[in-house]
Length: 427
Image: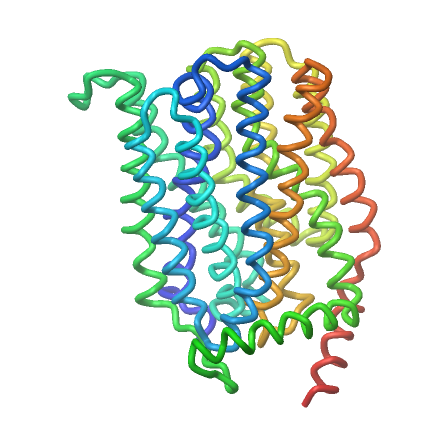
């Protein structure tokens, strides 16, 4: 049953669970540790290229699997089973980073790539359960609540992890490096434990055409071709996905590469960590406030304003000179990050058939992750070619420009009309 308090809280707690990976690992300690410990001896530009390539390779693999997995999950009513598999995979790989020793950047990159596949693959099925939890009336609020809890949950664990790094003696840890390695284990446990409510209390809607998993795999491959055809017919969906492809790449790239960029500019690790904490704790209330803002001006306009905000953030990031500038940048990111992510997800639910949510969210996540192939690799490549991290960061501005132009062409009412006509024609 939709809009029940238990189901909503259980669903949003998965954001609380897996955001620890996004915060402590992706945005926080992995880039710092990768540069200073695992790729020791490499130049700043070379380690940036390694990290950008690892992020891009993970994105390619997720993007290739996403639409197929979504179609299979819809056919077999297997969203929760796939979510469990990917969450477990991500948690195990995160914990395995404890085993990687100094200089073993290849092994660190491998565990990180597979862990990112677990994180991103799980999000396909987590997102696809949103229409089963919230009605259209509440979907913007529930999506925003999920991101908001994710920021505060990830932020709280990150505070503990930061203390493990800066004050290891408080925890009986011999040094900061060991504290960082132990933080990867803490993320794995956090992710696993707080994932349990979604499996216990969120009911996956039964597919009337449900079939056993082995048959669903075969049917899923066939469905993939049909989905491509459906997106061509549902032109509003296709236009939104293309817009999303561009602008969310800019957002994801900033999330994944900001710490590496700050390190390259010579900012101390402590300043980078403080900036990450500012993002988390500003984004917590901002995601819910931005939901209220979207109610007043409309979801689409709110997304457009967030894109503009990120374009300003990019330019400011290129020009910044001091750690204080980095703190200001972090607060600016916090204002828009949760809003653009939550509203994009909920806006998309308005444009797609609910009965094929995993299938369509497979494409949603595919384009988001395929776009993330471009950004980190582009920053790494431009940085190596020009010898300037600032020029590398500036290169992502074009992604926000293309995204904004395409989003202007999306008409929600026309999209709903197309979905209705599509469903009526397939009865």
